[in-house]
Structures are given as C-alpha cells and as structure tokens.
Image (tube, rainbow, N blue to C red; front, side, top):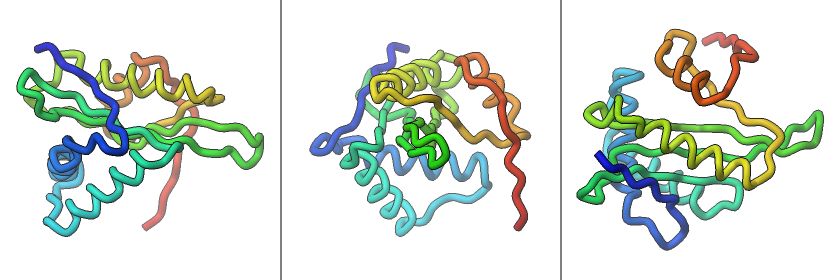
Length: 153
C-alpha cells in the first residue's frame, strides 16, 4: 500500500470528518467507548483549532482512494522552567487494516520533521504503560522512556 501523508492546513479541511471517525475508532479501541455525533463535532472543531494555530499540526495518512486511514496531531509547548519550546505528540492512530505497513512510522516521521523545523528542544509523547506496542514503536522511532506520570482518580 502506497500511503500519502498530507499536512492539513487552514482551508484544506477535506479530511476532518474522516479523522473524527478515526478518532472515534481509536476511543472504541483504547477506551472501549465510541463518540456520539456531538462529540465527533467537538473533535472536528478541535482539529480545526490545531490546523489554524501556528502551535499545532495535523497530518493525515491517505490510501490509494484518497481516504484518511490514519492521523497524527502535535503541538508546541513552552517549558516554563527553561523557557524553551518543546514538541508534544498529542495523537497518532492508524486504522487496524492499515497497520504493519509502516504507515505509523511515516506519519511519525512527518510529525517529527515538522517539530524539528519548529526548532523544539525536545519531543514528548504520553503512552499508556500497558501499551507495550506503542512503547516499542516510539522507542524504535528514537524517543526514550524518561518519566512516569502518576494519576489519581
């Protein structure tokens, strides 16, 4: 499969609805809950905000039929201690039938290139500690385990 990775920019919004559907699929897969139509609309608005901001980026992976089959979202953050800019990978997802085809790696490479062009000091991504495949993926991409985030609900 020959994937095409495109960065979505303001005015080029043809994949937003498809990405919202993929986001819902991701929620169903990882959190066992699908998004309702109101939540999908909210996701579409959030994606538009990333696209319109100079501090955000949205990438879509498309198949030969020009359908979005994966996406990635990143943002720029300001480190308050060092006063430096860093990159945060907020979302990355590939539809199950397109996995194991190096598509996530291609999307991640585009995302990391965008962050590098923004001259970030470092890049971080939050990964569930139980998600061994995601941990392995990010380590293969060149990221290293650094911190554990502890939460209380």
